[in-house]
Amino acid sequence: MTVTASDIKLRYSVATGAAGLANAGTRDTSLGKYVSTTDVAAASGGGSFFDDVQSAEASAGDTEYRCIFVYNSHATDSALNVQVSISGEVAGGGTTNIALDNIAAGAANGASALSAVVANENTAPTGVGAFNTTPLSIGTLAAGQAKAFWLRRTVAASTANMTGDGFTITVGGDG
Image (cartoon, rainbow, N blue to C red; front, top):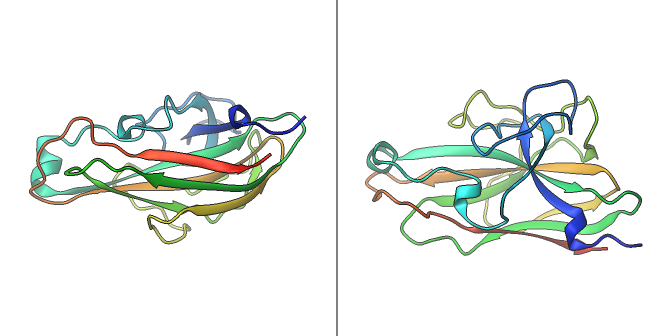
């Protein structure tokens, strides 16, 4: 049996608890450390990752971060050549970039942190690669492993308020 698209999950991160796959996560608390038990609601749409661009953010400008995991939930097989990318950003909103966390892929249910942790959504993570818009190569994810990546949304000063600001995240690879 090979890994299928339904075996590869996008999961929120969670900084609480003592191991991965033990606690639920949300968009707003996805600030790194462990893999949560919560799948991202949809692979597209900024609302799955960031809130709407509010008046204060639109006026002053704002940069926010989220830690998301790519998780191979298959029981036995590895996912090969895994990549993650963003595309289709909504015009007029924030600009979103991605970066891989420097901690290697590991057991999603392990007690070791699988990513950097930030104090709040406005704190930049340390120990991550360069933020950019090009696809990121994760490589091989063995059964039960996860790898963290970070999203950075930058809202320029004097941007209009915006609901529905968004983008699409695509995860691909070989079974």
